Length: 218
Image: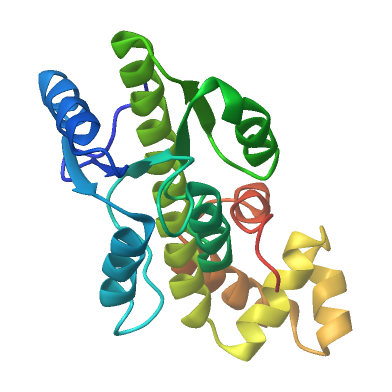
């Protein structure tokens, strides 16, 4: 399992209508030093998400995952899963379905839709917690990637329009002379802008800059 940031507090959400199972899962997770929050219905869990979304779209800032029962009174686990897809949460909050034998085909279909995994009841405690830890590691990776992207976007916002023009041509592999000709500026001016771009983006080469921005639409 990849280490989560030292400041991060992973949380495992438990959504199951059986009190006994939620309590057993919470105890099992505590035995592996994992925090959990239990919800007796999909509606209760969604109400929590709605509350946290009051000031805007909710995106967890710490690693988390969801253990979700397939069959429950009211909203089913599968219906909640579809709502989580709509909210854009299943990457940062990986979903592990808890399913009876009859629900296995449904759970398999959910995995194809993006669920992290399904665990068939009765389950092996160790195998379940191992998958939970792997889901939390995935969540931590997604959160780290999003923070890195936000940092890149913050740095980009500090560039002037001319610096952006130079940066695009640097990424395209143009030498300073061609950049100067294309932008109708002096080579010295290109050099100055290029140096400022490298400084603001915190890179030391055009290759490093290109790698940093490979997933960014400019």
